[in-house]
Length: 314
Image (cartoon, rainbow, N blue to C red; front, side, top):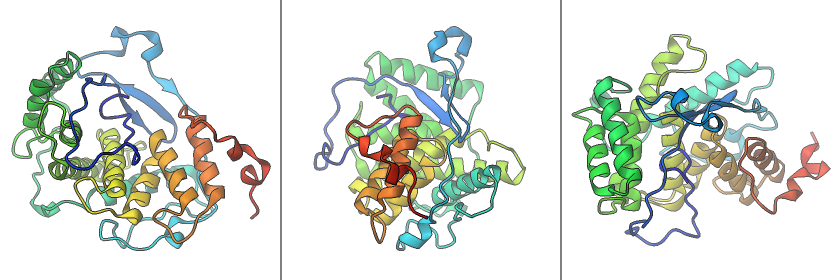
């Protein structure tokens, strides 16, 4: 699994805190997704022309929007989920309206958590400048070379809210803290950096949506990734209390913005009634199918193609 953008943390495999360091240095492969496409994000300064054709931009099927029921009607409340959270599932809305609403919903979740009030956060947010890009590329090189300590130290510097304040580096440093890659594992600090990444990305994306940009702004990939990883934190209690309602909402939002791992986790939540008032096997099958259609297949799920789940009763 790539470090950062394709990231599967299983509850059954999760040890008690602290989480021991993972011996191998995972390969970095980073992706930005929306409801139309999924494209690989290459290391800063590295053009797609410099890599194999098989690693270039890949088009995926448009996700079908889920209109059967609104998540709001089947979930409880959570302090990590705003009470005015946008519900994109609205009959009669076109796909563009739905996509914008899912992204706005992600930005609402991104601005919800954290110990530092959002108004006190630095507004100087680094997404891409030449110096930062070069440093990120160097940190990735060090990581893949197995020098996790120096790689993580560089990500820490780039993630500093009083320094570069770079959202991608905040996500990657947060994951390093969670797993103890080149540093002492600290799941509490990991959550703080993931929340900082989500909040910084959310502010950028809200500004982009207000400006009418069709596919969001420069931090959409970072926002979706941070939302998914925070969903993992709330599900497993990594660095924070377990919160099934929050985990479901974070997973579902990331899933509808193209994250295939989040599609599978959302399907699992529906199948087990996790974070909601009742199970919904029809919706579970639909999300599992979406994940498979987008290249993330789960073995042993042939039941999702039974007619009663493909064509559920109205």
